Image 1: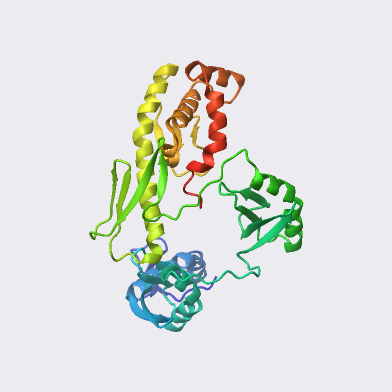
Image 2 (image 1 turned 45 degrees about the vertical axis):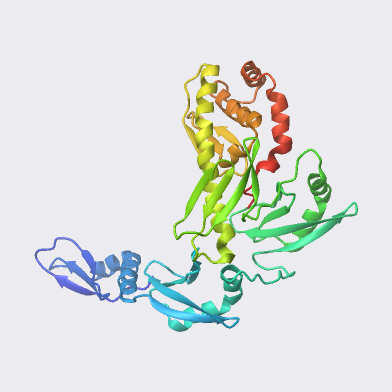
Length: 385
């Protein structure tokens, strides 16, 4: 750690060492008259990290946001550079209105900012202008796409490398796409051989008829979603500047402000659908929880709803029941099964024979509903990514 430059202000008023950082970045140490220079030096060294952090904050405030622009495919795209004291690297951020912002460290030079933007033109083109570049078949540090052939069937899969994982995992998603997650340190040849060794299992999961295949949603005008046994139709309007999400019968009307660029509309609509689905699940689930709690003779538990791509619901040891936000997309008989299942856990926390016999006292055909839910679940999962 480099010791920052500092001055010493000795005074009888001070009984211990203190350090101050002024808005201009100057560092001053207040000390008793009989201070030891070596002790002061060690004190500054101990606080060097805090001093540097504080200086960054002050220096960042001096650098007001700057305006620049970049030209991509004959289109001039303006962007704002915002300096932040705590930031250590450059990053590009885009909002739903298509405004681009570069967040930079306090000491970033103009050349480093403009150079970084130039190097990321392809990324900007893809996300801001909706002109996606073709996929590169070669592997990269982030991952790659490949395929395998088994029993005459060609199966595509994607590989993603992550620093926080310690082993290779293969997941077949509800839409039958195959995703492989591996540590960044894994040997690429060994990884490929491992995936090929799992070809029989992957093929069985992709071609199984025991589960339905999920439909990948585009989140666009006219798209339909299941909704408590009925069909919900998405209607997108652009009549006013404010965002609005209205459930009008079986029509979900979402208004998009005119300044939202087309390339970002699907993401914008998805957020609105997520909000509506979560709200509807909460509205419908709470009365059902109260109803089944009375049937089981237990106190109605607290209910939470969140985006959950795994389980439809779970009950914590503290008695809080959490449901997946997509629960309201299930038909009523499966909706009731999930609610009854989780409320039953207020009596029996495991899935022992006692649990199922208890659940059968309220829902005699629970096993039939369970099998139906396992088979049809992918049809009601609309948030796949």
